[in-house]
Image 1 (cartoon, rainbow, N blue to C red):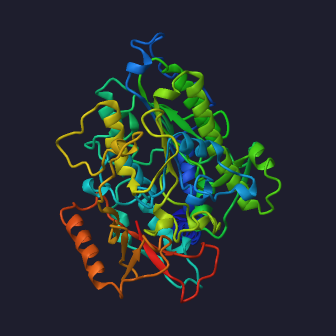
Image 2 (image 1 turned 180 degrees about the vertical axis):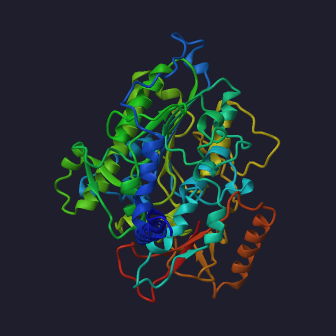
Image 3 (image 1 turned 30 degrees about the horizontal axis):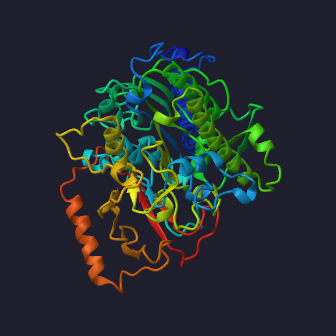
Length: 561
């Protein structure tokens, strides 16, 4: 006769297995909710944030080693994130009617040059930033997508689920499962950056803010030529419940819904432990940039001040929001306040240069990494251009672009020929007297001969290219071809007569279409495979914001990532 206890084991195992199955079912049903919060929870475990601490910026010499006029120029690049062409008043539009002009960005144009056809290196951040830092088309070294966590693909179908969606999100879960870890996606360490090349001439190089070019030790700024890096580790301007901030959530945007629970308020210095910034992120980065400029008054320095604003999540400093009480729409008011803080940052940088006696010998460049997105629900941000961030239309690529170098760039210049991020490295190196590397193709051109006071030189015509997987564009001789893979369609525009891309001439101009197709084919033929594959295809309406309902007649394209 079996012992009574022995007979109970099968029953206990059955109960345990049932409970385990029920738990697994609950987890599966709530997998989207768990994923929605898991990144934030994991970040909290791996990177607890210490209280704010002073940044120990390295101090330069107490006295100059040579007169300022004999020193190589300082270089400061201020890059906004997702700032639209029509977010600044520099080009005659902007938010002036809402009481939010951008006088400090405008001042750079008055004291130097306004590039009337300034293009981002790509319609998305990572690729655009890589172009600026290397002077090369990033697909030459396999960077053509923005790093995205492969784990996102496991729930992307649910995240982007919409019964009324005309064009489905396409996900390759096999490629997503094979993707490298998020931090390992970025610009390879074999690339030479403008910081590395300036370092050979004795420059002290400082990075402040966003990077998004990889977070492994060989990809971080300190391994790419920057002596010091105040690194934005996550993506909040302040904790959402902080009384110093005002939030605007976009519930119609799946990515926005993902950001709020997962982003944190943290930075690191030279890859050390995370700590909290002292205040609203744009102002904090500016505070630290001002301190770093003062510390380096007596030696040449290069500073990359890469702001996070006005990227989502939309968060405004309370004082900026309160100053715009006349704007009735809450989202527009928050966004306008964020633009206000970016312009204030530019003003403080310019003022510090004047106070330190450095303004006459410092190149200041301001731009945005790409156009503003449609997913913030503000239709005016890129006007008069069509399209948004993630598209190859002018709204995704044309950005505010201004620069100054007193005495070397004629004040009040309005520069007509198209320029783009790849031109920054050769231009800055020429100003610093540093030779271009001879072991690789540099795609950009030195703009200084065409910007000098009283110059008679004109920038030669050249084609410009953009690439996002099979979604590509080329501009040549004032004509632009956008080759869309999904839908399979060619968009051909004569920007000389149609700068806002209203009239597709692909059918009427077969010879021009063939010419630009040939340019695309020749340019891309020798390019390597991307460093990591695309596993996500996202439909983007070209003429409507994400919160506006689509019809079957609305133009659209797919962004590959």
